Every structure is written in structure tokens, then in C-alpha cells.
Length: 257
Image (cartoon, rainbow, N blue to C red; front, top):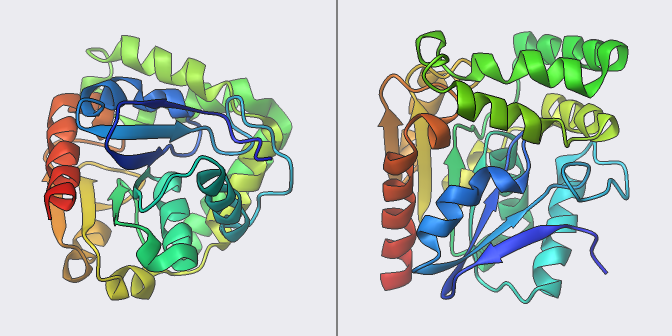
């Protein structure tokens, strides 16, 4: 029996929304409500985050994908559209490699199919050192705010505070495992390119975590590509209504086809 905690809303075509690093399924709360009039939206906590325990070591994205596949089978979630934010996008691609055509569509939300370069791997290594030394609360308090452009942080202070409190529900073991998993993940651009189903990418022009040039390099492999001007790494906070519109349009086209 899977230990993955989740909530679901609505009826219709299943849509699985996978949160990112230092996030929990609750981050999709407003978006799930908005989409639930047309779709059944499932929002899991990744193992080691929120209310999902870290039952096995999760320092390989392939292992996370297997756990989510088993969870979907238990919940009878068939032919889902799977959309992931950041780390959730990396998990989505691992699921795509594992499940292939059993996924009706996939989406990368401020995410990438490319592996980490050496600079990024060095940053992951520094994150591991910081987490071990200072713990979850101190890390997430410093990690979350810069995901949003500095000029927007005062306006979105309430949302940032909520995101930090959700991030604190991550376990130290979980954050360490996912940092290693992100650092060591393989390039899955060919997996994305070769998948014949609908593919969504939402990118932020001011995203410091996934640079816009890297996002644009995915265009040949993407069927539905969108850029959010002036947006950083948390488009679902910075331009929530626009993101809901894009997700509804993408999922709706798949359902109607």
C-alpha cells in the first residue's frame, strides 16, 4: 500500500500536479480548485515532503517515479495528464520514461529536460552542506524568497510567507535526497522529444533557477510553449490567473481531442 499522501478535487480527465523542491501538494490548492470544474486534479506530496514519509532512499528520480506509478495504479488514475513544477518536472520526465504512452500529456512548469551542468552541480553540493549544518527551517527561509524577482517580493509577501511555511513541512532527509537526485539526474531531452503526446512548457523570463535560454532550447520538442514575461520561478504565485488559463487550455485540448 502506497504511503503517498494526496488530495483530489473534481471529476473528469485526471490531471496530476507534482510540486517542486521545498514545496508540498498544497501549493496547487488554488489552481486545483479552479481546474476541478473540468478535471479530476490530484496533488500528491512527494515522499519526504509534507505528509508523505520517506519510506525508501529517494536520491534517484527513477525510484520516485516508481513510487508515484504505484500510487497512481492504487488510485486507479488512468491515462493522466502529468504536470510538474521544477523538481516536479524532473519527476514527470522520469515518469514519462517509465510509463510512456500511458501518460496522456505532460507539462514542465519552470523546469527542464536537461541535466545539471557543472556549475549547477556545485550549487547542489553547497546546498547539501548548508542543509546538514543549518537544517530545514533556516534553509527554506533563505531559499524561497529569491525564487520571485526582488521587485515583486514586497507585493507578494503574504504568498512568500505561505510558501515558506509549506516548505518547512519538508523533512531534512527528503531535501537531502532530492538535492542529490537533482544533481545526479540524467538528461531526458530525447525522452521528451520522442514522446508523441501533447507537451506543455511554461517558462519565466526572469527565472533564476531555470534560465530562459535553456527553456527556449526546448521549443523543437514542445507542442505548447509559453513564456511569462517578468516572471521568476513561481509563476503559479506571480501570475496565478494566467497559469490557470494556460493549464486549463492545455488540458482541455487534450480532453477534447
